[in-house]
Image (cartoon, rainbow, N blue to C red; front, side, top):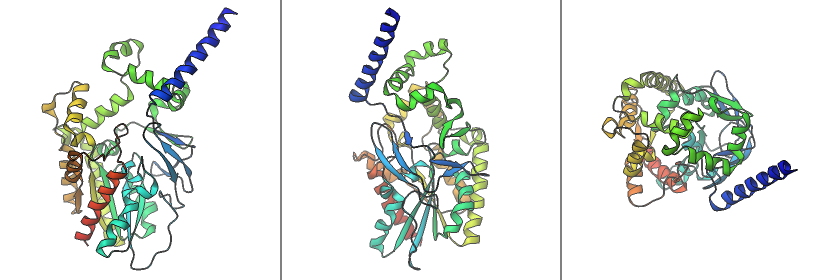
Length: 365
């Protein structure tokens, strides 16, 4: 009986703690419900499931509806448009998809409004797929995007991890119940708690602090996923990244060449947009990130991936818009362009991207 009472008391205490954390300090964790958001897409890795309906939220900053149309794009179904309508297809990763905003608030969806004052009637199609690098985007477009007959294809490149995502040695991503799961985190009680328990995420976050690393080592827990991901991103800023990321750079170079050939064969304009990471633009976050991993600032330069991608894109003569300067200016003026926890763009960030991209497209027509 005492054991049973102790067990009941423990369960009630944990339930009370869970409720308290949810009310007082909800823990951020990206959640997509229901499953089935992704589907296998050989010979590519995966694509968005046509006809999917659900929600995406991080339990602390946003909760948004997901609508995937029958073409596998985020948003409503593609309607027939007048012959003189400019069809702009934007391909890329989660920044294009618009994690954190509604489908009508992404910069792809906002482009027609931004282009209207210049007398251009346009439609913006959102082909963003989370965790895609340039090779993924090119592979997807060849099989699914070309048939949409775009007039302009905007290849959006996130400087924070697109080289990581293009690396042949990247961590394997599994499809579990139609959702992406890192191979080291697939299944089990831990994965379930991570999705559903704020208390578990709070305790896990505490154990990931630098002071608890010796304890983690004794428990055989290894480096936390967040720390590992940050270390990967900071790797693209190393001054020697040109040599260290050579396989990823070569894979990106080859994909850009194939994309450029497609633009010639199918007669569409191909342009690129460089999306900066907040780490690159905010000095405090830059130094905090390096310090948290004990890295030498002298060995890192926030402009490294910008330089690498500009060089690659110039080799293929792809006109390129660098959003770094306008976003840096916007942040310096106090504009909230990124979510503080999630680090994707807010609605304000998407609006700024749409404005800059529309000016760029008009100038290159």
